[in-house]
Image (cartoon, rainbow, N blue to C red; front, side, top):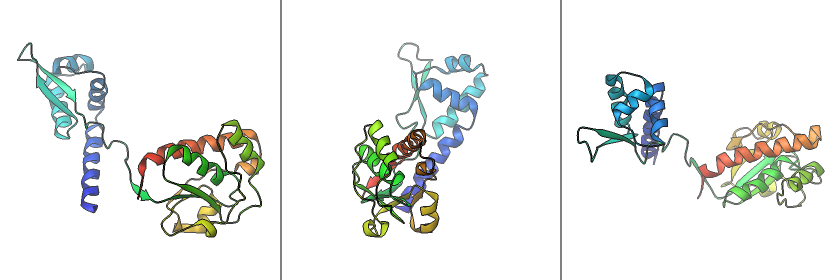
Length: 224
């Protein structure tokens, strides 16, 4: 498994290295829209034919482009973006989990919203807990969920120790909880506490940031 992961990283690195040249990045941009002949690429980029050939050879070497002969003029070729050209340029699934646990100090806002948002993005179960749970979910979090039509379980905040199992994938969503747990968590998202500010705008900002981060993590976390 480690060898497979290393090979995948090497392939990704090779593609990123190939795209580190602006002309090659531009070629790939153009090929996402349609196939082009080398002469058309030369005209579009305004560079010499020998440079076009060099760039195409580099892209072909890392599996990003392929070439085929024209059915009309056999002296002419067309460059195509390969099916796997963009594969691996953004990270894929990097972890596996039976369940996700979102953690903040009081389990009254950020972790509650995160668990609810996760349920809209992934089939992997999610719960939340607090290192020092409050008596109730903060009214601002409830109001934010209602504004965004997010179903929020109106449960009493729970202690992390009551919900956590050894197989859980732990995401801390507040600095206090992260620094208290140390390396015990899998990921940390440094998100300011909206309860401390108390405004609707603060809760909406928190909601948007959690939604963004969850939409990025969910496709990369696979079920065990």
